[in-house]
Image (cartoon, rainbow, N blue to C red; front, side, top):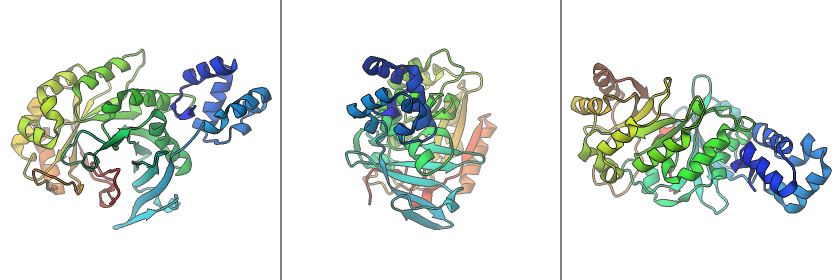
Length: 371
């Protein structure tokens, strides 16, 4: 049993079924291990006061299996213009305000990458949901590396545990924007959201989680149905559009051939947003491909009637192979210009300036394969 895939309710049920114990002990374990980072269950006061229960846990082997963590095998950050990569977590506290990428080795030897992004008052953690990706987006290194497998719930949530308690970073936001297509691993995504949201554990509010998708239309409907519960907020949805032109988007994103823009728009119109929420539209700009005023007009027309915010992102070169078209990055001035086009059409725009691109920690640069 892995504590990193359990909510308080599911752990309580497990204890009731196997040990005739209940919420009191389940709450203690989740509080001490998940919320406080205490990796030694034998020091938890509620377990010390229940020696027979502690003995049963120990003899069953569950005491040793509560927290099997992936090993962090490499950490990368930057020092001015120079990349710093270190093995075995050897990175010092002078890098508190810089983007950090850490590489985790899973129990089967596969690797995933996660990124800690410093914001003004807190840190955001970009988590992976798969080893590789099967979507094959032309601009993405993860897709170029091929699909290996889905991550389990505990492999997803362990990225936050390692960021908080191994790397000692305060994390407030979670974005499911790392390696993989989150909606292609929907069951483990939904369970990981529940674990991350558990108030007695990680305690990440739904409004501080964002799920990114390339446009798996049926799964958008499934996700919406799973999140319609009596709660005030839901996780945010981010959708990678990158072009409102059918032909251009299909050339960039093969998923558009199966679920074209019209089908995706219908799903977004039906996505449940609260009064204080927006759908986030991710738009990566490529030089002379999707950055003209006409491209902006098409995007504005496509988004008409949707409650959205457009995040503009400059393309980060990902060293992809087998390209059918040449992808070139834009200048900062191109991002400003495209934003001005959209703003004239009444679109709410945020310009996202790249962090970590010079050591392959930027958008579209994460990969399971090491060069």
